[in-house]
Image (cartoon, rainbow, N blue to C red; front, top):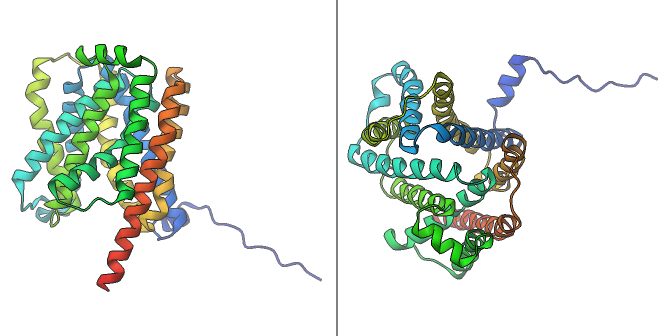
Length: 321
């Protein structure tokens, strides 16, 4: 009696490319993990470059190279990729992104990589608050409770190691990484609100291109004021950083096209885990007890908000259908 053999798996390049182009949960997980790892890579490069180069200059070069790597794609697609209905909004978004990236770079040079990844989650908390203020969106008790809990975690991180007096002293001297991360998160959140409210008819490619060009131009003058000539190694880091920024959005869109956003929510926190590991391996950093304690509150809070928002969207779609 012959035993039937299981078909051999095909790991050839054409088969892998075909698999990546398909929809499915496994493909979505693959792309979202790439988002997390690329984000970590960018944070590491900003941290390294930010030691020798001022944050304003890092921001300029990041978006200079982002524009440079994106422009050929725009040319290949043609004139339609350059079309935009709201040029003024791209200017506002670019101003916010310049401020956010400058603050983020500064924060990364002052604290462990893991702290930045944890505090990045607070963007969702600020989006909720700003949606209520600017878009008049209702805020239920679930959102309110999760937001209060999330900011409690932020306070634990901010006050844990230095204590209230040390935090106030660092606040007054503007020498506190948490403040820079939170300022960046607020500007990222405001940009998300603008995207949600106004930029609904813009193509993804035009949004990527114009925000890169706008941020580059806005960052040019502040960068000149603090200019420090980058080394060849710095330029290589910044080139990878610019291309990586474009890749993050590409991977994110592939992930969302492959499967439901709600199914991928837990995998967003891979970025925190990988930041802890990479921070330890590359910079010999370990998160403090208070950072981990704050993360233990922030992560469940933002996850709860994500699940709640997903259920609300599903409910709304069911009512409309």
